[in-house]
Length: 131
Image (cartoon, rainbow, N blue to C red; front, side, top):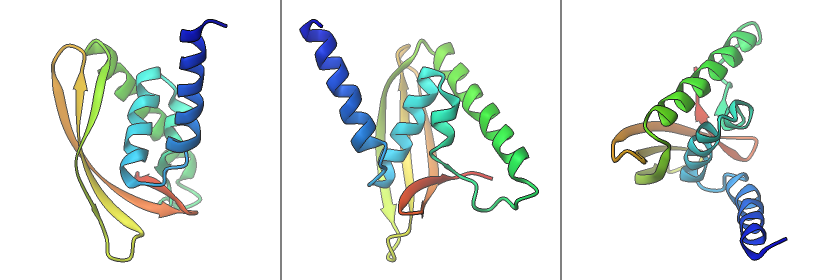
């Protein structure tokens, strides 16, 4: 294994261990966009909260999430890929269980798009409100 491959493997391991745990509200936003950039809809959906969906709505909610992740992936591809994710502002509620995260997504074609999401702690992890 050459040095570059080893460095990349370490970076991926570090990201999966520390970003995947979603200890900060902004880390879940970054993880969502990074999964979308890779076209990994299943990984991206792990960062979405379906808590507001009833059990009868769950199958539909998960299908909508899959379409959402695919659309996000296609937008990233159409803009020549993901350059970086800029966290503009994070506001955590006083109880520490919800937050608002404003982001600016920079694409490789020098375009960008702003987004704001509500994040909630679910099972001790930050999740993006979805449906």
